[in-house]
Image 1: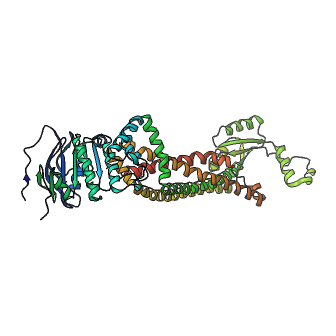
Image 2 (image 1 turned 90 degrees about the vertical axis):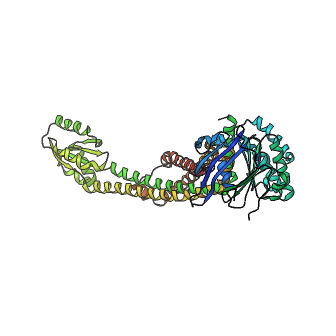
Image 3 (image 1 turned 60 degrees about the vertical axis):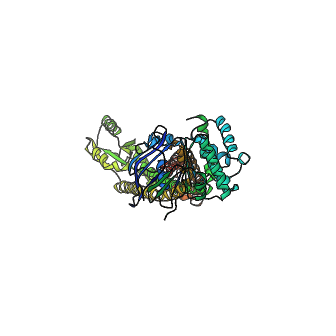
Length: 243
Length: 298
């Protein structure tokens, strides 16, 4: 299938993520990504869609430098991820915020501590933490629940905590891996509205999702993967079904 | 490292112990069990060595001189013997003292019938050794000295004690090797549990951008604390048990305590406390490093 490309020329000057001829094969031999070329500019909102096994998760792991490419070139915020040294990875990751489908909160710590945890990792002072955490909790609508433990929160609320944790360090890029996968439609929309708001404030947002309704409604850039290949990259795209 | 990060790390290390109670208990129990066995074994070996050492100290050789030897030559021979490294101490026994000792021990009042010293040529040096295994080397040397008529020694006692010493050394090495193998097996299992408990937390920290040092530090603090607690518990038990056993043996078998002398609890603990605490801290430190390291490549 030919790649549908409706974007108007490559945006280079403000490019924040670059993948050139990136391939990734696992030790089992199955190629997860094949010859992928992708360019994302600062401040963009991009959906990465595709069915199971299409390579979405591999792409996110490559962007996080959890995996390394088998061949090709990948750069995020000027960091060449195929060559970056292990000790430089923490500094690189501090530019990213990450949200997972299963929230990945620390169950033994309350909402405040889960968010403050991210600030402690980048060694913010107690004074800054006391200022920043309530402020971000207010943005995600959880100011009143800062003492609650994750198990006392609904799925939507837990995802908001995860979002607050991802945002409190003011990342340049927010990666959301199936952020609505465990949420009902109402909560899914609330999370997406928050992501849109975050994007409007200048953060580059990349959302990996299966949610057809949201993708079609939001009219954002949509990159579609199928069996490790980008089959479509549309400026105001929609969800493409596999058939 | 910022000061608040340092205190945060310390606090998290302590908190981790209570957060993962089962894991902490399993780790403490594993370390405590290994060090308890080690402590008991050390106490037994220390006592064996003490008993053998006491027996060795009682082993001596007797150096007799040629008939009519001059006192000055006896003095010279004494000086030569005293310089030998095998010699722990030596006593000069004159012919009169030798006779008195023999008479008092074996003849009693029957000895009064002797008007002359029957052991006239029995002046000797009684030489005590540092190490009984050196006896034959010393005897060869003593026999070569001009003016020495005869050297008496107990070959059997020396050989037996040397054999016992070697046996204790072999058994010690063997049991330490078994204890080490058991400890490594138990600790690696405990570490494997630790890995499953910590995997997610470590992953989250790494995704957010934590350095290896930041991820590792609270676990190291936790490991060291667990090691210290795991080492302190068996020390307390052994202290109590040792005193009880010593009192029991002394009371129940008084004839045994007159033959054998045991090492005091303080003497045993002078070695056992630093070694056990060192091992506990070392095991806790290494265990936590190994647990975390497997997940740092995220």
